[in-house]
Structures are given as C-alpha cells and as structure tokens.
Image 1 (spheres, rainbow, N blue to C red):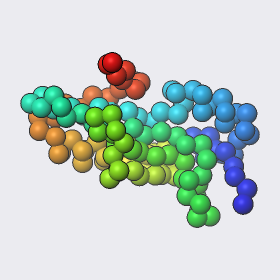
Image 2: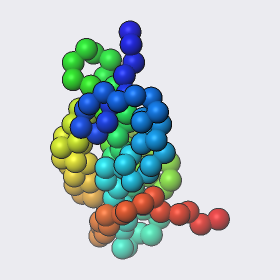
Image 3: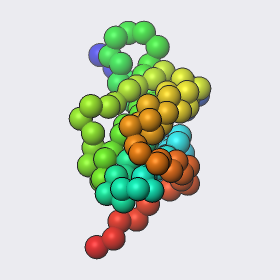
Length: 121
C-alpha cells in the first residue's frame, strides 16, 4: 500500500511540500474553539479541527484528511474524535461538535481562537 500526502483540497502533494505545510500551524488548523463556563471556572473545553495530510481512512474510498478532537481542561477527551474527507465537512463537523459540547456547559461562553492558548505554569 502506497501512502500519499494530500493538501487541504485533497490533491496529492510531494513529501517536501507536506513537511512544509505540516510546519505551518495556520495551514494545519481549520478551526479552534474554546468553551468555558461563567459559573464554573474549572470547566474548559477546546474543540480543535485540523488537516492531517495523510489519509487516515485506509478504506480505499475518499481520503480522510481532517480530524476534530475535544480537549477537556488540557486533556484529550477519549469520547470524541471525528474525521472527514473535505474541509467543508470538517468545518461543519467542528461547528456541530461545538454545539454538542456547549450544550453540556452551564452558562457557556464560546470563543473562536486564532491559535492554541498558552497554559500557565
């Protein structure tokens, strides 16, 4: 089985281009959203959707190139990871994930971020 690198549009790219794009956080990040609670400052979720570069589907169908994950208080949530073939599907999936997670947070505040927030300590 031959592994191929793909850009965000689903076109095959060479390894050097893939390495350059993987080193660009703005290219890799599709969306990043923080969900916090006004009434409970210990509640904090990050919903992250990224371009993967390699096909993670391994099914022979359309390549799976994007992934949404949920992080709770800095830790990856074992309950949530979705993958998508297109950037449009990834954006929709990200928004749906934010809606589902925010519905579980009392007095939620949803903030769309440009970059991963720095942690204190």
